Length: 164
Image (cartoon, rainbow, N blue to C red; front, side, top):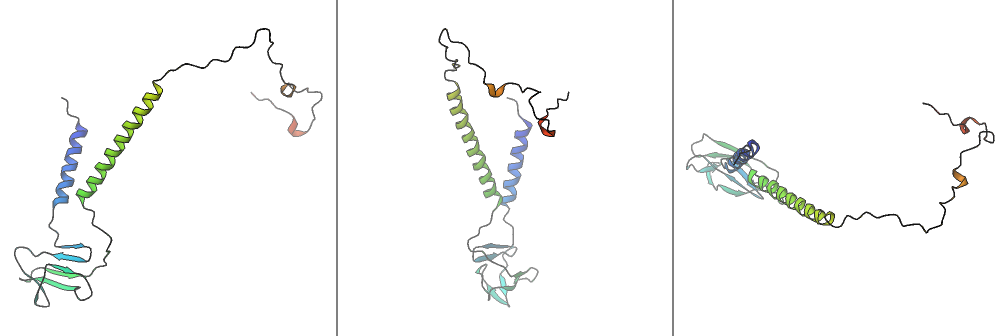
């Protein structure tokens, strides 16, 4: 079995894409109306020197400055929310691409097989119908006869100039 270098590159790219997508170390994430903040370790989250929940519904009273218990990490939260939106992470993006490619390949196979069946049928060439015996060929039409140079008009655009 021969390994194609393009296949190896595709596997490496997908592995890296999924690895980056699995990294969940963002300290603040927004999902719908809610946002979640994470302090390193097991530190508590504080707002105005009082405890705050890690997941909070966003509105005017919840925006502002948050900090972790030891005071080393600060979060200032101010956002414009979209209730009908969702985050497009790497794994979802990879799934959409994979499903699209799979559907395209299946459609190509179906089209190929359908056209192969139709073209594999009889390939009889149609022949011109035989003329009745004793009939002469059709008379050429006088509309297509060459023009007589003596009866033509001598206007500038009525003369045919042959070049070459």
